[in-house]
Length: 84
Image (cartoon, rainbow, N blue to C red):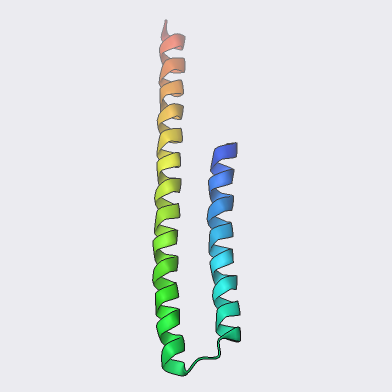
């Protein structure tokens, strides 16, 4: 079962990715620049997107690791309580 925090992280990551794709598409369609300049801008945008995605992924991984640790602790407590 997903928690609210997990859903928020997933929604943020999806929104970030969708926004980046839409922004890149709009930039390409409205850019009055030459081919080489456009390719340079695409490369820069891809690098920025990669860094943003990496940061969002690291944040999501950290949140999931914390949630997993909390869940493990609760399970361990429940097992200990049931044993006596």
